[in-house]
Length: 249
Image 1 (cartoon, rainbow, N blue to C red):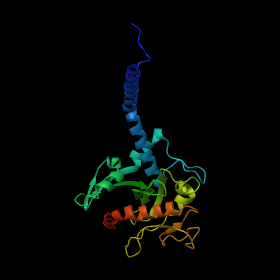
Image 2: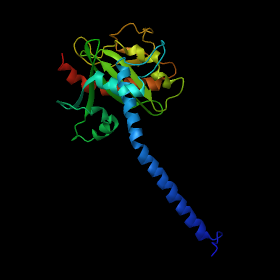
Image 3: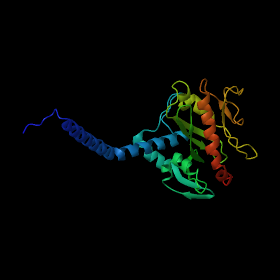
Image 4: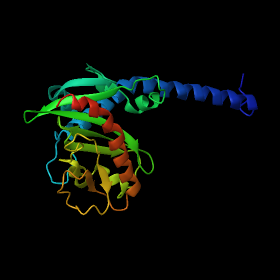
């Protein structure tokens, strides 16, 4: 019996069947690729943490090149000797601290009864312990985030910043070397141990960023709001780690 393809019922049934078939294919692909997607996310985070510590594949003066994905897991394992989770005054080692989603933790912390989990990574470079802290904030258009490497005195050893959708040539420049390198050497604590953060500031009379105790780096021209976002996430997120670092000194 011939099928009447002109009937409305045929069109509806055909559409339903196609949706089910295509949906099943997409669901299968998503499920099958999930391990690969998760691995790539893990490699990216490991590359970012190592970059903040100064472990990268840079060759030129303006390069931002990461350890390759086929080597990053081994490098991360050998470099990051300890991972911690800080919950209030409780500090515990946790080899999967890097899996903590700081965006979700920030949301959960809006409940006063919840104690936020703060991941912290400890490694060693040139014989000195280095600590890497993840931070997250808001730029002009979307999320910005980064990793800040500090020593026991909370002096910055290196940073890595990234963004979801800042303006190319302006706010997107936060992930360029000329901006990120300015943070190295900046002091987060003054001599009295008071936390000051780092201001991304225009007209700070230190365009070459030679003063490292002024809590300021030179802003990117035309990217005021993104720079303010970097200032805010540093002040907001790094400050939460100050009590822990005071126990180290």
